[in-house]
Amino acid sequence: DLHGTSHSFPTRRSSDLAQGFASTYLRRPPLVVRLHSPLAVNLPAKGETPQKDHWLGFRCERASVLRARTVTAPTVRYAEFIRSFWRLGNKPICVVPNPVNEARFRPGVEEERRPNLVSYIGRLNRAKGISVLLAAIPHVLAQVPTARFRLVGLDEGDAPGDAGTYERYFVQEYGAAGQAVEFVSWVTPDALPRCYQESGITVAPSIGPDNFPGAVVEAMSCGCAVVASRIGGIPEIIEHDETGILVSPGDSEQLATAIIRLLEHPELAKAMGRRARQVVEQRYARAAVVEQMLAIYRRTIAEKAHERSVA
Image 1: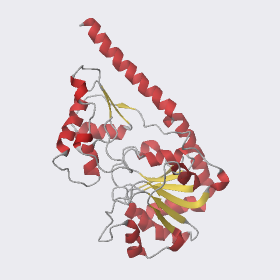
Image 2 (image 1 turned 90 degrees about the horizontal axis):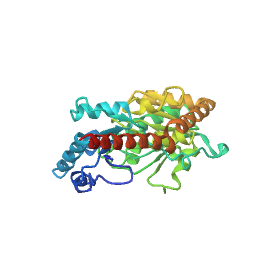
Image 3 (image 1 turned 180 degrees about the vertical axis):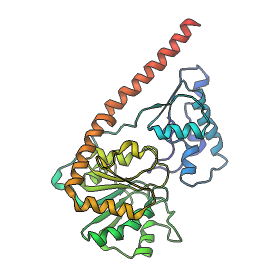
Image 4 (image 1 turned 90 degrees about the vertical axis):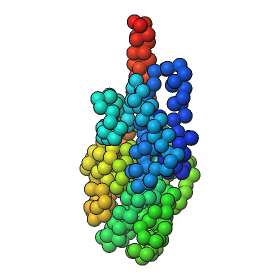
């Protein structure tokens, strides 16, 4: 697996990357590489400048893909982006989505869901579009004063200006919102599903090229309606107006309008959430994805065995 950073861990150094790379030169096993978000792509997407110690990791990542017999990626858009970014030519890339633990992330007790609660769950940084969400909040509250917002995740401190954190930035730009806006820096893994289960709406306002955001699929798995940016692989996960609402990235007014629509029509949000859960069970549940990957592994091994038998 080639993947970059997560919301729980800092950026990894090149010494932590491509752990299995050397072993592929020892016995020449058939190599399957699964692309999540390679560091070579993830760093520029976040607006970070690669350091000297990253370049070895970059080379190992691309070399692994070039040497692989089979390459997979979670979305069509990301597969084509990687093909162009690394100049892979006609090398085939199989599309297999990332799985979600549908038993852990499941709908809760419907009576405990708060239709007026809008949640963001993930890292708080520029690429995730947090400043866009914060700009939308005053518009939503002006139209729906009973709305409540909860932002859950590690603040990476890249808020605009000299504010540092997004909580301070929100206060500076829009004033304190009292109990209407809550920033939660950390929840335990056991408590994470409940964050989705309590929410009427989850938002993913990314402005960076999100490959396959786990928070979107987790929210869908919990039966929560999602408002997300039409960017990266998200449009391949959410069907607009069926399992969620897609908006233009960076457009706070459009984001606010979509949130207001679901707040004012809670039955619509519930219906989208129910359909989203059905999609998860069909496409993203662990068993469904495992079967796809097992088929790829079996085919790759069989092709290698056939080549050896005729050599």
